[in-house]
Length: 111
Length: 115
Image (cartoon, rainbow over all chains, first blue to last red; front, side, top):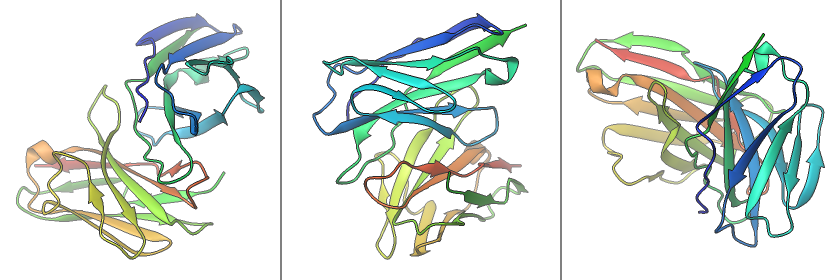
């Protein structure tokens, strides 16, 4: 399973765009990149998943360069309620995908 | 997204007793379920992977006789913490997947306190 590296923490202000980058240098050909959000005392919540280029949904965008050795989660116009821990996971969707969590990035949004 | 429900959300038990935590997939059939524990300010640590109808696969360092996992149906997996001790106090989270090409959905977690 590919190891991931993320910043330990980030601060932002309400209304700003936040970009969290994840490094996964040894990503395998059939690995997908998935991001989860976790609030205190709650289970993680799926945000977005991608394989290459750009993926966008109603809450975030995921940018993946051609070499796929990193990915960036982009949260547009964050609010106080986006304060949470964000996890980047890399693993194969086919053939037994164990969801292994790294340390995550603790995002703190200030007023 | 799909719904995974855990029960109970909180439990306090006495040292030496056993506690069972249930994880249910409410609107899909979960071929695979995962169990995690999480200590304060730390990430989730995968304990075991269970596939319906077969024995769970435990991660290194996780005692399978202490953390009994049963995945008897496609919608229910249980984790039983046997002979619980205060050091077993933690936040336990389950997740479930419908298939190998789908994302995992997580339960809301169970806060276990052993006194």
